[in-house]
Image (tube, rainbow, N blue to C red):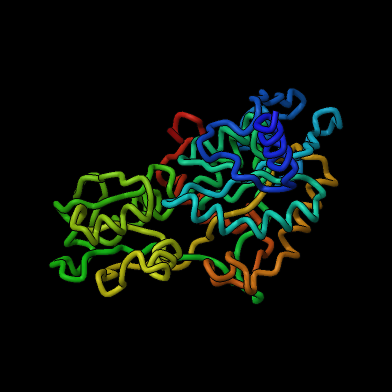
Length: 340
């Protein structure tokens, strides 16, 4: 009896925790699958690149909230996920304070869903299992068009500045000194949907005298961190990476910048976007926006990690134009098969 009482007491304590339990550690699915509902009334000229489940009547390139209130969702528990990263447990811990704030502002429980692949994150939102997310630069258009994702915020400065650059890393002792020196070398790209890790190099590198896939064989590493560490270990001769990712790695002591050398760098791109599912109840969606824009980074794990002032508003139509242009150059099709 005492043993049974102890078990019940432990269970009661665990289930009484109000917010952000480490939901996806060891779990693949945050909730049951819910099939999207097609928008049959959307005129073809008001859909653009969006899947047939969504409509864009106001021309902002993201899915409108369904007109029928019966199609809105108003979950008691919000599922949040951050873009796939190396060392996901470390990042999950960094988000706890913000998730507590999100729970307080929305009045909902908030659970963290760990994802290992961009595909899993986008499919989870498409199927109604994910409500709020931070999605990397390149996959953002996939999420917008395939999952009804509505990006509205980005990490940045009080002056409105945001962004990161594409940098090409080589080992500090490498004999590679120019982009043309990459010919015949082992070069790591991240994934096919990664902006700085693949899409931008495919579009921009030919201008620098080297064509990926022709002048060197592309080896996909799976993440920016794996690419950077692969260069340092000698697994790869070079790698295009996102400056914000490797800067944070260096800050955490995962490598020393003395170990690498930058041979190429672009102008800034937008960073990870933050948004929610298009079919959330409008009052809940507004509360989510409020939570992001009222969260103070100073003195928090997110502030220490990302070294920014806070979340600032973005326009997907305007701020992701360069990303869409790069993807169009690469003849990217926004399909689930393309993500895979």
